[in-house]
Length: 389
Image 1 (tube, rainbow, N blue to C red):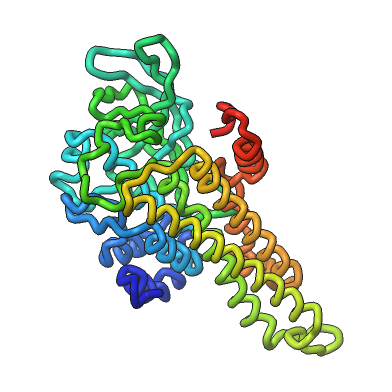
Image 2: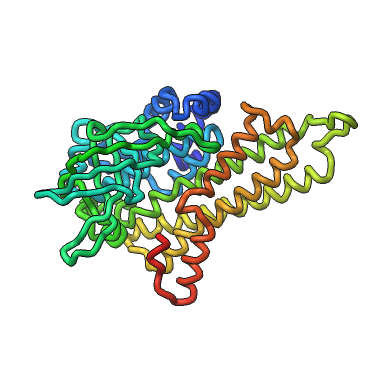
């Protein structure tokens, strides 16, 4: 696909260096600076940035292919960097004033996030004062801004899930990212103490899903900004799961091809169980890719037509990616369980792929138990359950 996707060709060119740093990323518990420089050197951070500021505004299918390829080299790097990219799509739905603040003097700026509304706010003239310990902010060490969640009262006194944007000077980073999977993502905690967020840096999540945010319509010729923010935000998770699974296929073949059983000397690579596991996982991962590509193409087609998705379409977009993640994890598990004891050794690529794969299914947006309920309610004509975002 790289012939029709110049950015993918550039990603593939630097993948060997990214892959060589995978163990370093785990040891650092964040993306190595060298990886960030490599990815910025090819402009991947500009994927969803408005062209006005030098962005690429590439399609979701093009971006997802780049993320999947990157994940095969280093899952932690792909997780953190893909979010830095997709947050630019979200920022483009904020006010023009906010966008000028973020990119006006630094077109290379990016934002991390912590969007669960665990913050405390105090209303003030022209904005809010926000405090909180905001966790899971992937890639925060490399971002100049942060998007954080809050619940703010509207004119009727109802609490409205919203997002606020803060500069790096308004928060500290607590180095507490000790995890079994995605070790290299650097998903640390932002510590915010009474930071003032003006109204032009705040948007309601519902407005960003329904085309009513301050930035909606700023780019009438764009094929990617006439759309809800959430499908773009969530796109990386399934792309990463797919990329990890596709790399697992190759790594399993490489390891198994010359593997012999320690006590019998039998060639495992020609044994029937290994062949069957490889075949089934290959089919399953291919099915996951086909399913995701169809979903991504549907996103892109809606964007090109400037057609806002229906509630049913959004439900499928929301849940398709979680089902694909479920398939990818099953395929990885099938291979890893037959990869032998040496695959469990620290530093072995297969155990890293196994751990990172399971982490892709642990995010709130890839929890299939939740997604199945969301889609089931939609299929039965029931109103959405507000407890399931």
